[in-house]
Image (cartoon, rainbow, N blue to C red; front, top):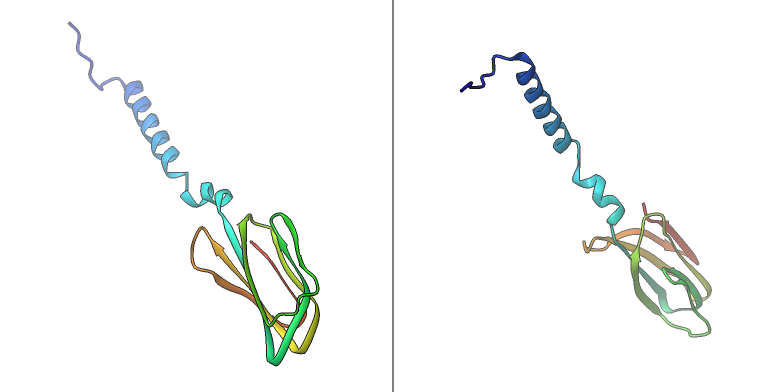
Amino acid sequence: MKSFSIKDGSLSITLMLISVWSILSFTSCEKGETNETNDNFYVKYVIKGNGAYGRFSNWTATTPQGMYTNSGTQVSGWSQTYGPLTRGFKCEVRIGNSIGASPTIEILVSKNNEPFALKVTNTGNSATYVIN
């Protein structure tokens, strides 16, 4: 019976090429590349009336389902969370009417169930942030 040995150069070269190919195949994939498209984002809108008589009404906010609209109700504060969202979503709040000092608008974003991070704060009638 004939035994095989690695005297044959072509066998050792073939094994070496297979080993190198295997190592490169497994190390070329990064976890971040595959999860980037699967990220879930949530937006939290916060509006606060400023001053003793700070109130606002007739505001809109973008949501995954379209535009949230509140007409006529005067309030001193409002907060709501929407999601899941994807990269490129435009978070936007617009206030039609305010009484007293201009309200403060905050836009906070959470990625993959992490804590919310403040992305925009603005004292005025609008604020915008694009998730990236």
